[in-house]
Amino acid sequence: MSEDVIVQTLREAIDPAMICTDADTRAFMARDALHPSRLPAGEPVQPVCVVQPRCTEDVAAVLRIANATKCPVIPVGGGSGLMGGASSVIPGIVLDLRQLQAVEIRPADRMADVGAGVTIKALNEAAEPHGLMCGHDPWTVAVATVGGTISTNSLGYLGGKYGAMGDQVLGLEAVLPTGEVIRTRAVEKASTGPSLHPLLIGAEGCFGVITRATLRLVPLPQTRILQAWEFRDFAAGFAAINAILEAGIRPGLLDYGDDEPSAEHDPPCALMVSYEGPKAVAQAEAKAAAAFCAQYRGQLSPRREAERFWHERHASGDAYARARAARQPWNRQRSRFDYLHVALPPSAVLTYRRQCLDLLAQQKCQVHQTGLWDHAGLFSMSYSVGSDTSREDMHRALLTACQDLNGAMEYCHGVGTRLAGLMSREHGVGLDVLRRFKRCLDPNGILNPGKLALTDTDTEAA
Ligand SMILES: Cc1cc2nc3c(=O)[nH]c(=O)nc-3n(C[C@H](O)[C@H](O)[C@H](O)COP(=O)(O)OP(=O)(O)OC[C@H]3O[C@@H](n4cnc5c(N)ncnc54)[C@H](O)[C@@H]3O)c2cc1C
Picture (cartoon, rainbow, N blue to C red):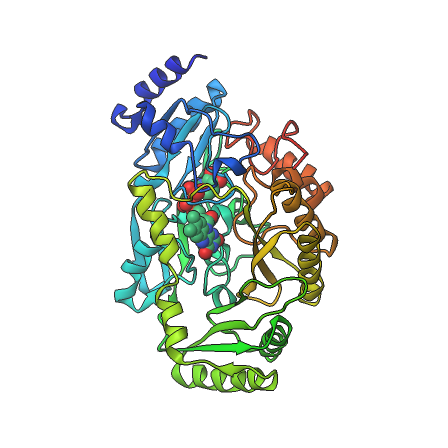
């Protein structure tokens, strides 16, 4: 069916004011935060149109038409994803979900019923007067939406204590590619067969469109004790962090990183950490954890360093939010720069870090930072490749080295198009199982094609 006929069919089914066909808007909404130079297929393609549904029934109407006409649908929230999950790689209907703005705080249940388009910041603003907050605190609070953060199973600064976004989800409403609506019961725990809502967590808009979620809220901490520590090298602080976690202490913030390490040089490493909750508990945790830091020769830095870090933690996400709102480019073309966020068994972290530093040194690449976030097994690194090295080849070599140590190639940004080529290596037979789920839920393959390597034709080469 031609694009004009699809748009006309949509206009007959939903309020035409929700449908936008202007070329600039379509081009803008075809992109997320992944720089096109990292999109395996190159520049995004021009969508057929952009639809801004106002309610679940609007979403269902769009999906019924898309399914009948076999037209792709690309769900988009804040557009801050870094893996191309919300980018248009095949012309289709971009479903801009930001108008799904309902928020109801249920203080007695410590829950919130939230529309998929609500940002985490807006959710927190609604929860705060009730002494509650969302346990998920990504850099991008001002732009990332409930639907997008669930669909990437995003992780934030407080993830070590409260878990990832998926851990906040108690129940979901979602529209399946056929237009059917599922609503799961929002309770702490059910034993009534396999739960359905986890199928949508981290599914990157490939299994269904989330329209509403019931999220867990946590009490605003009575006390938050912030500390900054410096360790002589990565391994020393790593040992202290392991000791803290082994003792059952759960820091809120746990952000650990160095500056410009190399195969020959292990610079000092800074730990930003918080202990939070009831005052007596936070104080006891801070005291016990400080003893472990001291045991591994950590030096306590002035508290203002930790406070500055805490207050500035959303700065780059806020910058992205402003750029996106103004439809301006956000990331400069940094053709040699790259980063990874991998999950490993903690006992493999130092080995992996050493392998990365050696591999990058062999290729004369520069490492900017290595670090941990939230947990001893969540390792991040940023680096720039040398002029003789292919950025994509290096990225693949580093991620496959992680997989070979029984790690997972990404812990927070998802797969999108960027990592799709490594999905088979990541999941083995499991990828076939995921593809069977996909075929069952989405027989015409309309939802977010080209993402997560969920169709047999998706590329297998990274
Ligand atoms: C500067 C910067 C800092 C960042 N910091 C963090 C961080 O701290 N932690 C982190 O985890 N990530 C971070 N990210 C990445 C990004 O913010 C997260 O991936 C976030 O979860 C994406 O939310 P979004 O609403 O922008 O989703 P989008 O980018 O719009 O979409 C992400 C994926 O979800 C799908 N999707 C969106 N809405 C729905 C829906 N309602 N139903 C079904 N599928 C849907 C899309 O199709 C896509 O596959 C950062 C990005 C930037 C640019």
